[in-house]
Length: 233
Ligand code: CA
Image (cartoon, rainbow, N blue to C red):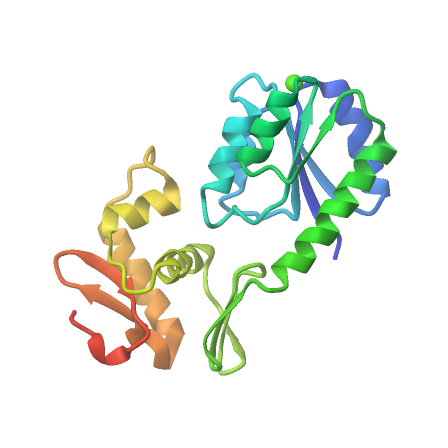
């Protein structure tokens, strides 16, 4: 399967020039002229890499980078910043916000492809470790968005997966419903808190023998626990 790249660049001539070059190098490339629609699509599609222009009309590229690096669902996507600024401080800032690399304009397609290949090689090496075995029979693969129960892939929706991802980040920690909603959809979307219960119910069903690891703490919220006897709900 072709690796997917999201490219955010408001200068349409750069986008139009690079997109076909990335495609002919074997990547599937989706272009955006602003950051917001790309961040939106990330809720459904996780690309292998993001090329992010620094100066964008709707949002600073660093702000966009900060947002996706502070969300556990998107934090492991490698980001290469495209910047016209040569100021060293900006480069340092970009890397502080979690960008994996940066490239200064003007650059040619060859140079960009070399950076992309290098970053992807590095990330696939790092991501091979991103698998959580809760027990040998309950394994979560955060890169593939897969859960395996007794070596069989459980058919989780993206929402269910993200809830599991959040809860397993801090085992024993209780998340209330509004925290779970914020994590799933951000604070700007109005969703009733009951929705969380429905997703959790479906998730627990799919976890089968391990459903008890997701505990309902009455009146508070939910937590992930590795000992099933602790169930309080
Ligand atoms: Ca720009």
